[in-house]
Length: 299
Image (tube, rainbow, N blue to C red; front, side, top):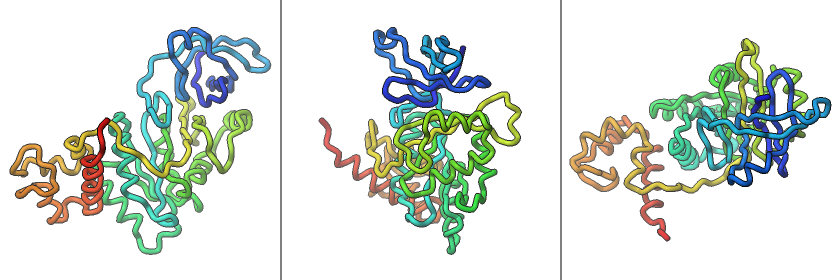
């Protein structure tokens, strides 16, 4: 029998088998011998030990299409990163760090600006345009009033999506909106694995079904603990510009090859910045991250 690991706690793995529910499984000793640890998101083969109690053993792990280090999860198709338009004010430096981290792992990102109901100044649309101009899919929503949720559902349908963002941005509220059309089976899954309604302590996949889903493919969302800071891993300062896709079309106008776009004269990127073709907010974050990498100690 084949399924997907949706949660792992204290050596137990909860495997969602489409049409059959969730099986509580242990991993066979051969995985420890081979130094292989099953991850949330793994597609696995299980042997059923007790059909009534839905218990089994994981006997095989299928090849992974992707693997994230933090959170530790396999086979993610995309990331939905959520920031609030207000309350709290968005930390764009943190957002750019997250986007870089996902680019490093070749995971496409969707940016969702939540709390549209608190946006009296139209800032959400301004933020959306900045990141849309950089090539990212962006959305503005209100999870509190369920505004814009259909657009989110369309982007998540049939895929496994990691949902992440700082604490307090309405991440759990948005996930609850996405679960409004959840199947009864998935509702029982949530009870069985004791998913907290308001606080996320462990990474877990939540199988969801949308109203227009024909049942041929299950969608999953991965709820993860909120983050407040992210370091930049395995990046040299000279590589940073490649993680700002909006720079690419202007770099050919730089006088010097390998231009850092900071203090060099005749820089195509800085010229584009002055002409309003590149977001000053994004460029200033780039400069801050560049200095951080420049001053980082190497051990």
